[in-house]
Amino acid sequence: FGALVLLTLPAESGAYGLRDAELLSLLLVAQMLAVTYLASAVASSELGMEGEKGIPDLVVSAFSAREIALGKWQSGALYALYLVAILLPLIVLGAAMRGGATATAVLAGAPTVALATAAAVWGAWLGGRVASEFARIAVHWLALGALFAGTGALPEPLRAASPVRVMQGVIEGGPYWAVGAACAVYLAVSLLGVHCIARQVDAMRAQARGA
Image (tube, rainbow, N blue to C red; front, side, top):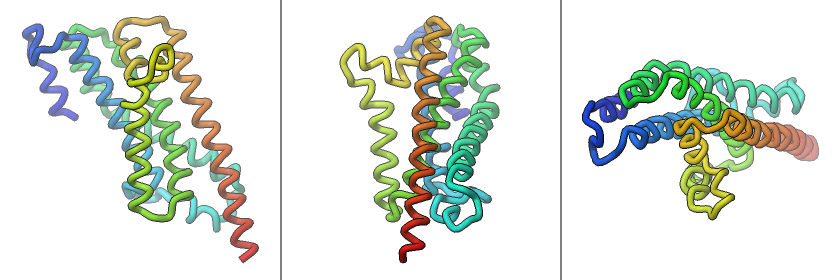
């Protein structure tokens, strides 16, 4: 990621055939993509992290289904926030060198954390739903592709759901309510995932008792 920041630092306007706003957009979208991937990959057990347990492991614990689901939401949100925080100095540097305000770099972190949290929750659900590691990774990558590329190919006004479009709105100084609306949608999606995880845990426990 640091290498990408360096690639966006040349002072000459129009470096690499891109305008400053386009380079800044590339940087912030790359941050969103990286944070979303890492948060969801860890939650789905595609990437291992010490102390992180998947849904199948937690099913046999003493925690209630609701506690497990909310715990997955909390861990996903905290990890996404941590990733955005450690990337913030690089993002601020890249934004400043491309003529962007520090406030823009900071504001971009809000939809990034919200989206990554939702992706982490659904990644955790996927980790408990699909037993095959190969199939789980394939579905995970297809979902990320649909989220970032597929939504960008939608016709207007559905294209407003694209995370890339949301980030472009941040860079262009769009109204704060638009960023807040995007964060609210991502929050709603993550809470739906919490509900699905709780139901999934209940179903897996019921199946285990029946067996």
